[in-house]
Amino acid sequence: MVHTDNLVKHFRDAKGNTVKAVDGVSIDAKPGQIFGLLGVNGAGKRTTLRMLSTVLQPSSGTGAVAGFDIKKDSQQVRASIGFMSASTALYGRLTGMEVIRYFGELYGLSGQELEGRIDFVTEKLKLHDFKDRLCDKLSTGQKQRVSIARTILHDPPVLFFDEPTAGLDVVTCQAVLEFIEEAKTLGKTIIFSTHIMSEAERLCDQVAVIHGGVVCGSGTIEELKAKTGHQSFERAFLTLVGYKGGQI
Image (cartoon, rainbow, N blue to C red):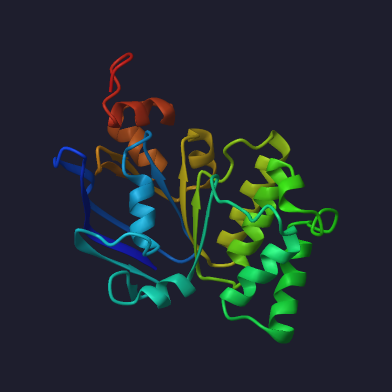
């Protein structure tokens, strides 16, 4: 459902030097699977997600989402995904419901289909108490629920979650994780990026650890712990990214 083969993205910095943000990433994620993209800040996770979502064009390599080529079929890819991150912005002068309805219309929904999907996400994410409040007046957790609602409104087969629990309180965090688990049971393919190793252990069927733009370890959590000789996945992760007591 999500596949990349030697995906590469290079940039030029202000001095004209080549920056290898992503340098040959190959992953495969299947329906009904949560695939974790793990790495420190600047490792290349977000650039990979942006290429998969067609926001960025790869420098080289190939990728496909829901059977559509990320270079040739950008419109079909975008229609097949929902993308949410901790930094997803909402329109502050619109209410939560106005944002959801606006995105529904952008997705091409209308009439009874749109109203049915709005009713579904409102109930699923418990938006009733604040759906008519301006987004500028919502708490962080409430904004996150509205963001999830607009992400899943068109019922896409593939979901990208980029650090979705960042800045959330414990209760709201649990609600987000439980929602992701439920999406998996519905057969969605989920690409999940996080810095929190306990979340990866709880959710991910497969993971790829990215460092310096390359995959330095992939497989199940147990496979990576066995590979590094650590019982703790956090220690296994640190070993894979080359952490040496204060230096990476």
